Length: 447
Image (cartoon, rainbow, N blue to C red):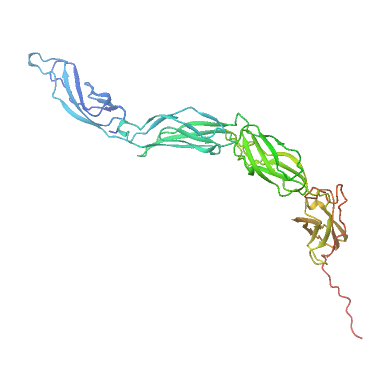
């Protein structure tokens, strides 16, 4: 039989049961003794009426036992009587099997998303190999869960029973974790489960409270300082997290030093030269974190950005000259059969804010459905692509001044006010998209 086979019943194991005293109704009982390594939860016994043998081995018990059985009556031994039969011996053998290991789990877990790495010794306890004879087996836990996205480090349990995992920053939800225990001979326990619930942080992430100027507007090229104050002590602040924002002709500026103590950083800036303004901004790339490893503004780049104040810089001539359109010329041959042509638009200086809405088409003839298709370029030169549509006529590209086109000093095209930078004297394309038709006259004969 196999180990842990349960209660055993062998009907008719003993037969021809007889007290050997005809005419006398004597009481009978089987005397049973057991010897050997195999242990029993229910000691072997034989029913004297039916001869049925019953027994049950102890849990996880294996090996052999010699069972000796003798039948005894209640007639006694007076006068030389014999009340016990000769003993009969037999062997019960339980063959070992690889038992399934077992264990217990701790309670369900709840953590905040900014709590970082978790380690819980003894989370898996009451670990058993399956039986005393399997004590040398090597056991290992296997874990799976139904919400991997909740974790920066997936849950696992080591051989000592320690549960380890790390919630993902910004995560929120519940994962059901399934755990099994296996031995090195291939037996695996039934799965046991627990849950890990990840909730938003109870404390808010760090933010920038203020950026302040520490000096007066510079009258010389001496450096200026900014004070950046966070809502709590942070680490990871460096020059990559800071951006200088200049207007006008201010150039050559740079961050020369950065010193942080607790929640306050002092930034020293070399202002360079020129005239305009120079400001300091914080750029959030999630590298600035508090003591709980929460990123600035919470998880996600940009949500902790902060726009700071500016110094007025007057270390050179102030640019007050507005940009103007210098020319609009054809980039293709004219006349043109279409379907597209391009214009080159040149400004008096480098500008930004140039788009399709800054142009309009002036048409003559029968041209139908022409349109401005695209604008490309940078600095002072831009290319405008125009779909010619169909028909015959001319196309001229004009600039509409709505003050969205500005130079580096923020001077609007033509100066402040719409329309004063408009340009309507550019070159013209002759467009003819109609194919010629050959017309024959009446035939005639020579007379």
